[in-house]
Length: 263
Ligand code: RP5
Image 1 (spheres, rainbow, N blue to C red):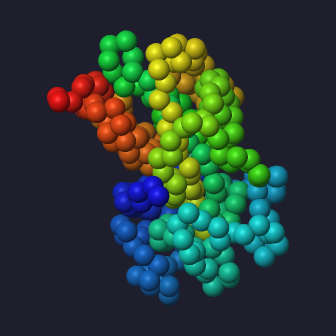
Image 2 (cartoon, rainbow, N blue to C red):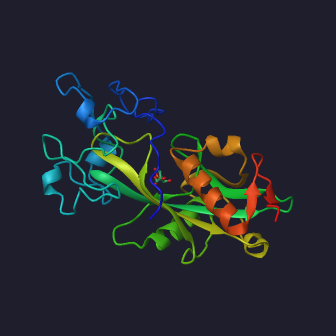
């Protein structure tokens, strides 16, 4: 079992996705039980692209959707008055699916690929997202019927032009992602896997932004850079570093340098 992520950001202080209407204000960490349903009146928003019903999107009428829209790593998902899945972390101030194609959990996979550079600093592959310009893990949506290890490889290729085998990668996290696109009825969940490359393996990786990203690079794992990553990626990277430190008997200090622990 992977550790459950503590709720870090509120739904309402989240940076707003550029295409979204203003969210109905909700206090930090409010749960569904605490919401006054008479007063709570969030806007309903589904993007035009999602309404056009491309292959990756569910029908707007959730009753016509064949797959289980209540499937989640977060356990039992409640339904709202209309029978639509309710965000397990509480109200977000927007109803509908926003720009997310699926009702309920939208499953992604995030590759966390690290190496130690020639100066002894821990580095991580990151990409600059096209939608918001933030640095992020090169993750993406799991296609229907696709194995997560295949998604990890495909996404890293589509974003950073690097092609790696994830069969031996370690699971870091499975669950909710605190993503700015989340709504009351649709949200992101991810499988995050870590792969640490030896110097020899890393020398074969030549990063170049591909169709799905603005830029791709090796980022030094210093505290500032980690804290400024997209969504809950800072948490995913910190978890990775904790496990890496334990397994290697080393410490990654705040500037990203890797030092051996004293015997
Ligand atoms: C995040 O969005 C996930 O952690 C993953 O990195 C990403 C997937 O969405 P797209 O990059 O495909 O938009 O929530």
